[in-house]
Length: 166
Image (cartoon, rainbow, N blue to C red; front, side):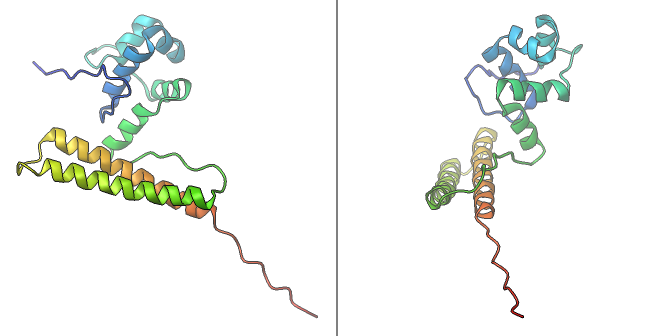
């Protein structure tokens, strides 16, 4: 018999896309999920239930849920499962203060990774739960680094070209 993990905590970070889909049922209710997925509430419950063997969520369902609910957790879980990270790209150019804030966020995330790793190694063994916590911190660090890179890229300006005199 396989063990079940409680996913009832709001906005739970999870690396199982199917498990995250199930949290949508708990947080947004089956009628809302069904409306987004264009099916009946019963079919939506089955598609988002990881223990159901007859109905399965499609990529189209996952994308629709993400867009309509403004909730990227399922796509983030899929990315993490594939060893990737999702992050928001900054809109337009950023100010020096915003760039400084992003640099400070990178430093903060590095500190969080170090603290998580230090705590996990206290007993000499890193267990799966500790590994997941470290991985979440690393993914936050990757995201903050990618945002920093995008913010720096938004500040790049072309040098004016020299006008040739006749």
